[in-house]
Length: 501
Image 1 (tube, one colour):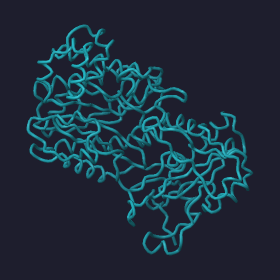
Image 2: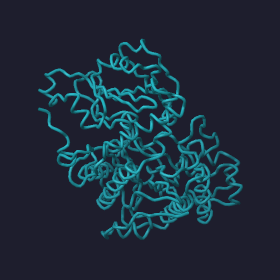
Image 3: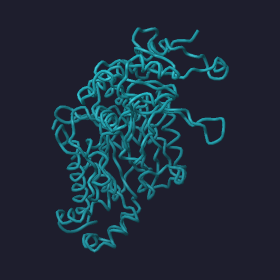
């Protein structure tokens, strides 16, 4: 007899949901059922009627090279969106117009139970994931013929952030069907994923709550003359205690001048250097739950108190953050918000004497891109850099700054995005700016050298767009005084910030 996950999902409740136990968040499987209905309606609106079926392949467990161990499995995002299934090796289909759907699971040998646990029958999957039909993968052809499938819509499209494409799903006998491998399904799913339902907002809110608590615990544990990876270890530990077994991306935990490395923490630049007294520490880390992730960044002084130069840089970034959050609402274009954040940064740099001249002239040569060489933010959801940053048919601008912006569309209610301005004194970027005669005239080289040791500051909030503004889903200290108080041991229980713009 296979144990039901319902005992982990509410003690036998008739409603199925994902849950990791006391203190964690319950995600109703009806959320995924509603996503299948929405896809069916969207395909119908695109001209696909009964007989047209969206066909998707879930993720596979992948061996570590030629060994008998496997990489940590994570479900393919679109499959997770529609089915919420944690098991690898599955397929699924959803019919346009009717919403009829079926989950296909691997037919496992009985010996699977020796090492991997009970072999779950199709009825178990129907109940636990609230799907109408569950069959085996070797029954795909038989099922599709029973349904009288006309067009078989497969997932095909290029991820605009990675430039990669998922292989089109296939199976033995697929040549017996008319396959539509256009970008219709890819674009449809991407646009559906842009707007979050209330269940998704609450789920992302839980991820942000866990991340906020974990960030605060981690900030307080940092000490001079210790290794950077201790921050990663503490954040992962605190997140796991609250039910988030995975982070949505590699933890970024540099200190000092290494703060300028935007995606620090990868294999070639791991979080392993010594944190020195007087440095700023930058933590860009986000807890993940049910494959949805947060993405929160905090920057703070290792010694607990900001130096004069650190206060100037941090204050500039916080001012840019507030300028954007006090402006965004439905209908506002995010490319304009990127330019707004750049303008605020330049104003503060001018006030500090780092740059000189007219702000408007600096903007003409894209000077701010030398200090913030990344975009203001991106969509957030099942992926850290989630799909849908630009509508179908639109691509990033080629202008400096905007070329790095992952979300450049008009904002809509219930989008979840990041607001993450940064200010960095990256030796490479500064040197390139000094080589450029059009930029060099605005730079005060003596003041630049004074700020070199600050490294960089980034502040990143996860926000949901509301009907008249936005709500910040994470709650961590942001004002300089609050950061210093919390580092000194003060409690932090501030409510979520909301802006009505």
